[in-house]
Length: 431
Ligand code: SDX
Image (cartoon, rainbow, N blue to C red):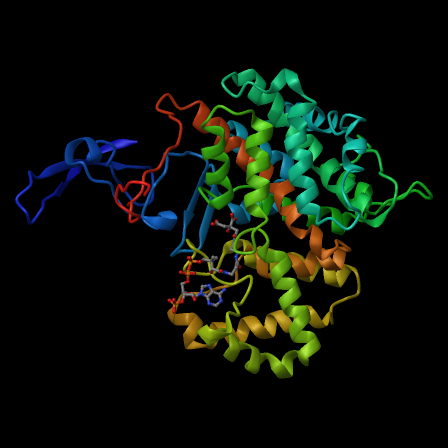
């Protein structure tokens, strides 16, 4: 980051001394006011619940322009990556900062695809769960449990350990998500097949059975790979900030990623894809498109507590570029499967049209986000609704790791420890 010629000056009406605060510039995007010395100089904290105006770190991984609806991974627009690259190329880019050349690409694909099996003991760990446990509960446990199996790559301060843990997590997440699914439906696990692509392997582990050969549908394979790309990273969102804060204590990479999985589960974050699809199915049951007006009125009524799931975003105040790409993927998959007239897709498009023309949403800059269409395409592929967020976690694992590694490699890194405005009881004695 570069020191700006501009300075911030903080003055107080009570005559306390003025404070000069340095301003730093990034490559693109908002400058930052450096308040690191503020408490030492003024004895006061800043106050920013939800971090609406706070940059928690400097990062070179992902850039979002919420007003333009722009998303760049290491400077490359998501639209170009989704069209010209595959998910493992994107993983290489996020982890190493550059797209791989032909040799690097071949080696990286092989490295990942040769480590897709999990320790055979893990299947016994799964047996401890109820069959009807939510897959995200199982996945949170499985990812955390990886630190109980892979002792040789848990020193987060060791760059080599971080690299090994990164490959293990990227390679094994599809296997773990598929195992959580198979456990829930009472089917045998499918072992990974290393001759398949990353996405093809996942589809076979999810939908294949030992009773017959599973033929990967190339349209669904490409769609799943694109879903992974679109969810790979997203700057300092809630789960990534959780991974950074958790990892800053020096805990092992698997534990930090497990914390990210737990945070992503929430319906305001990664759980929104499951909530958005459930919302569309509820509207369908109420009467479908004919009832959309009534539903939208309920959303606009604050007392209803009803939100338009898959809409709105803390950063995007324009259309989420991932939502556009997800809608295209939706079209491709539904056409391939002969589901062009899928009523939920028609309902979603009609709901989007109403919302984008309604001043309540327009005035609040509420647009579809990545979760609005992702549920429809995953449902069409055959993914159970409860597994949508597990697939989001699978795809986001590389982003979490890249961000954790960037933090641990930053010489300025410290353990994260926010302060507070205390509004509780003053000191008092027990009677
Ligand atoms: C993800 O951060 C990331 O980058 C996350 C993510 C990633 O890739 O990591 O992009 C993934 O989490 C996408 C978001 C998925 N969540 C949802 O779709 C759930 C529904 N959306 C919201 O709950 C909400 O929009 C948030 C949580 C996403 C953003 O909330 P903010 O920025 O805190 O905004 P807010 O709640 O303060 O809302 C501002 C106004 C409020 O109205 P007023 O008080 O001004 O009258 O907009 C309203 C809100 O009531 N509003 C909505 C709404 N979202 C905001 N009203 C109806 N439906 C919605 N979805």
